[in-house]
Amino acid sequence: MAHAPSSSSVSCSASRTSGSRSPAAPSAFDLPGGLPPEASYVTVRRPLSVLGLTGTALTAGAALVVGPPVAALYTRTDVATVRGRLVGVYATLGGLLAFLPSFPVYLLFLAYPLVPMVYHFEGRARGWAVAGGLLLACSLRLDDLRVLLAPLGGFGDSVLAVLAPVFTFVTPPLLGLSALFVACWLSVADGPPD
Image (cartoon, rainbow, N blue to C red; front, side, top):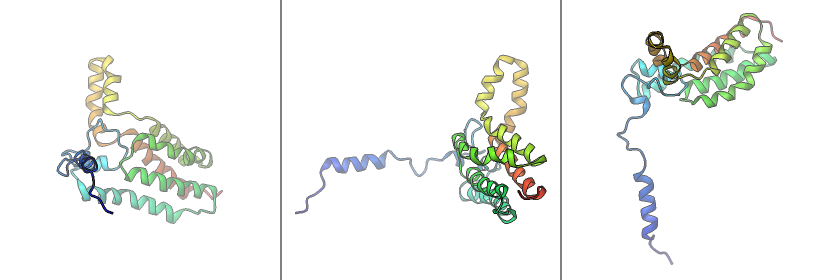
């Protein structure tokens, strides 16, 4: 025997849908002028959103920025070597984290390829890998920088005036991801296979 749903089950489902975000409410990526500098996302979508891209154009732009370096590393890497496998793992994880709006905590996924990369890479590639790792660990946002520079008074305000536009466009972890892509490229281009 079928029975009609009780009023409590109807109200539960109605409350679930009424609490969701309205389709007209903009996301952080649809705001004019891009992501706010205080947002803690690590993504190439930040600089693209500052340039005025939104919605589908922002996603396509991110794919065009991240896709070619990842594809180039895939095609030039010899996965029969330890170095080649590390480059492949980094290209996959680093590309995903750069493409998707990721919180800094997800950068921990890069610890596996990063530590062995520092040991296996040589010369300039190792230097870029170390620099990239240090920048990944520097998870500063603009509001953090304001707090750090506040005790310095006028000098802190001057430094903040210079760094605020930079932090609007890019964050240190995003620069770290980029430096690690350079390290991978140099490793593939320079060094003999292990």
